[in-house]
Length: 85
Image (cartoon, rainbow, N blue to C red; front, side, top):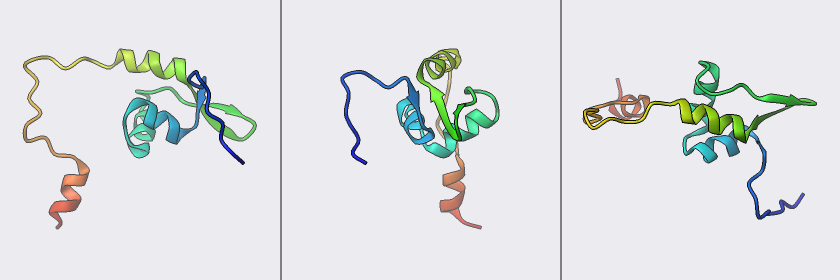
């Protein structure tokens, strides 16, 4: 099936698309959904889809970085994998 490009953003997004839309990995996106920081999907037949407007609203609720935030030295799980046992 050939994908068609539109001149407007789609209203509904699958998990991969929603993650890209928010600028994060699929695994991080699903983690945020699982812990309730992002909305759960709507179910259409057996397909999980996210409402783009609900994602926008949830994203707006995330705190903004302040000038006093210091991310130097922050580690993530990928850093731990690279470091090894």
